[in-house]
Image 1 (cartoon, rainbow, N blue to C red):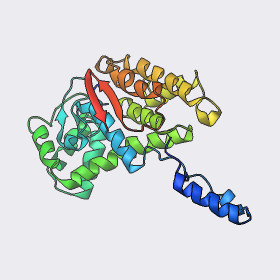
Image 2 (tube, helix red, strand yellow):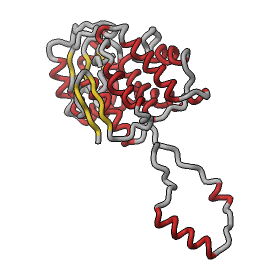
Image 3 (cartoon, helix red, strand yellow):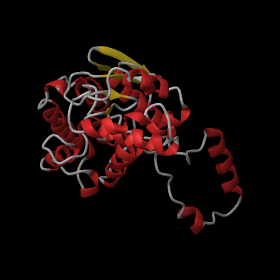
Length: 279
């Protein structure tokens, strides 16, 4: 629906701390503490960790907008000729797929009479088509004007999380996937949506499950992610607008082959031939 597009153990002690503990233990009896031995190891952060989420936003923006500056994309809007009408905003909300309509309705509910509210009847009419009827000629201009409003920026953030980010992370965690797998799910939902067609996220996941088991089912995480990315590439090639698979081939697959399942920086990747780096 959009532009063709191991955390370090926090209990590890320093050498100085280890030497001090050793000296203390040689001077006193060793007493085992049931509470200490039962202390749980802190879980590694997921994609919903603020630092990891920022990486996710930059990765998606590199594919959607050829830029790591994802916050500059609130104002982005154009028809990219993919049959979905206008594509706009930080996640590629589309006038033809309903998510742009939901966003503008949320903005209108929070700020009645805003500059985009008058387009709601037209957005309802063009939903499911690539038509601009009722939107041209001033809708792009007004979208860019609205994007200067922090209320509209927050509405974009909230709809991104509600429709795409939160469901993707929740499902990936249920499958036992770490940060890279959570991102792979998120990027797939961003591009393909979660409808019922053969190229939707749900269909991609089912295709992967037919070839490998995720960790939650006792499978190998790397093998499952390769199966998921294979299924994702197949889905992308079903549509001309998404037929360039570099956001998988020279980005996600690169991290996977390096064994970087937690998306630990530094990260280097390419999308559509452009090189990107997160230090």
